Amino acid sequence: MADSNASTGPDAGSNADPDEPPSRVAPASLVETIESLEFDAREIEAAIAGGLAGGFQAALVIQVYDTDAIKRVGAIFGAPTLNGGWLGMFALGVLFALPFSVFVSSSIDAFVSKVMLLSSRNESLQKLLVPLLKRSALTTTTLALGNGYGVAVGAVLSLFVFPIWLTVAMGVPMAIPNVTVGGLVGVIAWALYGGTLGLVYGLILEY
Image 1 (cartoon, rainbow, N blue to C red):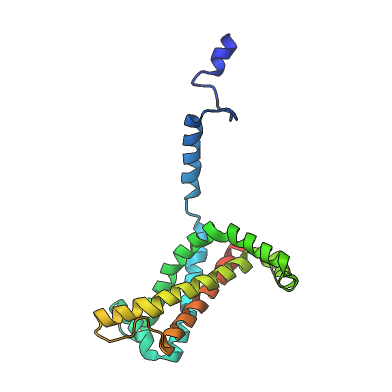
Image 2 (cartoon, rainbow, N blue to C red):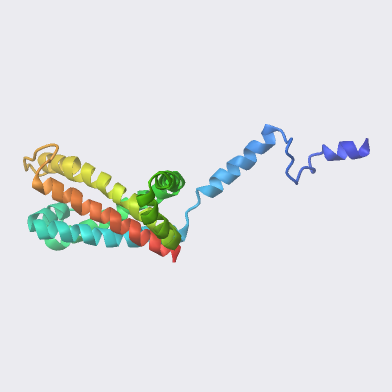
């Protein structure tokens, strides 16, 4: 009886018990959840580097198409100049890179599962993807996710956010959504941003 009472005492149970009541399991699960939310410094560094590299690509495309367009980006930050536009693109690149890091962490497993499922059904796709995944699995995955992320960011910013801001804050009438050549160039620029972000992000974490 003494052994039985000792096993149920408050100091017992340091080892996990499969029959442990939910009241004890819940706090442990909460601690694991909090620990899982801790930031990885390497992931933040990879996101910042990828954001800067992607911002450079996007700014270059926008400037080549229309120098005034890059200046309008600078106007968002109160500096409607070429330098202001470039600094603004770098700032936006880093800003959108941080949510990308969270997006990758939460969706990479499901994405890889879908890719493997699709490749198993398509022989040509399998021949293309399997060598890439074996050689550089994380970078290949983040590159694909980055492209999709960039297109989504570009569609929201170039077709809706920037035109609305220019119309309301700057008094420059713009079509909303901005389905023009300029708007589509903006989407392409941010798609390149996303691909570069994903590529750099994956390379830093993988190598």
